[in-house]
Length: 124
Image 1 (cartoon, rainbow, N blue to C red):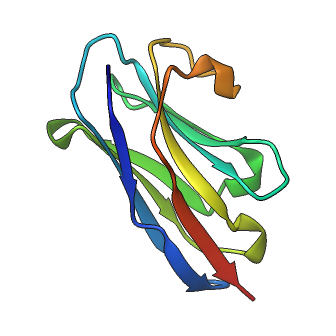
Image 2 (cartoon, rainbow, N blue to C red):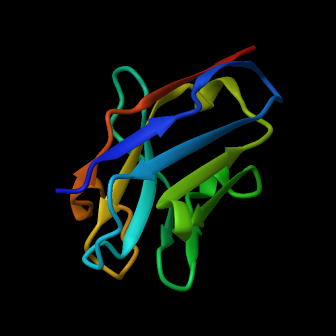
C-alpha cells in the first residue's frame, strides 16, 4: 500500500504562487504515474496534471497550462505542483494520486492511490 502525503496549501491572493508537495511512502515499481487533482465544493474531482516517474513526461489540463508545472524528485519520492498566476477559480482541495498505469489518463478512476488533500484558497 502506497501512502501519499500532500503539503503546501494555504491562502494566497490572486496572482500569487504556491508550491504543493506530495511525498510517497515508498517508490514501488508498480507506480508508473503521479498526478494532481482538485475538487471544489459542489463540483466533481478535476484532473490538473500528471507526470511519469520514469522519463518525466508530463500532461496538464488546459485550464492550468502556462500557469502550473508538475515536477518530481525521484530520490525523495516527491512530486511537486508549482502554481503561478493563481486565480480565485483555482480554489479547491488539491489531491495527489498515484497510478500503476504507464499511460497518462485524466480520469480519477485510473488512479489507484490517493492522499488526503491540501486546501488551496485564492482570494480576489
